[in-house]
Image (tube, rainbow, N blue to C red; front, side, top):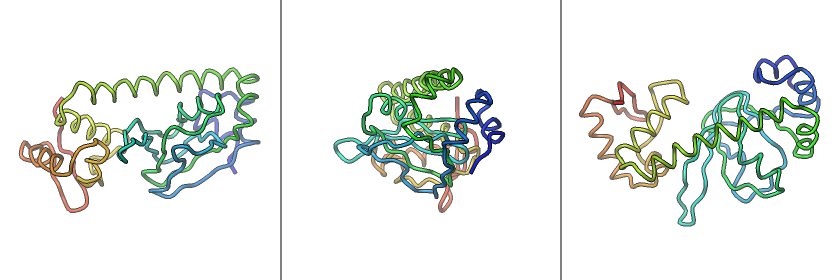
Length: 213
């Protein structure tokens, strides 16, 4: 159960009528780290508004790899899920909690009412589209026009930004999977970063010292 006041605190762009409607119809769900919130091809039955934690969005590729898209942080919703519900389509992405996460689950059946009766929700959805589109363009730019060493730096900076810590609990294997590379290539590049004094690698985590740029 979540109160109207708590919703207003988490989503300052909402007005009271919108927050009251969401509080009445939404349920608060909790997900442990590593839990898959939604899979590619799954029917979307609710829109999740992240209230705590961190969620990674990725798209599965035909060869079994994954294409990292963006993270969802508190106060955010998945733009692609919003688009799928508007078109009554199944999910085109996989969402995984990268740390313990809480989210408000708003029934899909409520979407039309929110769009029709609450202008603040309409604006929130448009802003969600805009911000996620910008992140996707940035990610695509890194993939299409950058070398792997540049992509790795971008990835590490993004990880530090969204996690809020310089200690990243990521293995070279996990990084290689997200960057669609091999563990050997990533291990070599991480070693080079360590030799330059940008990072230090420990058992179980990497510590960011000072990344270039």
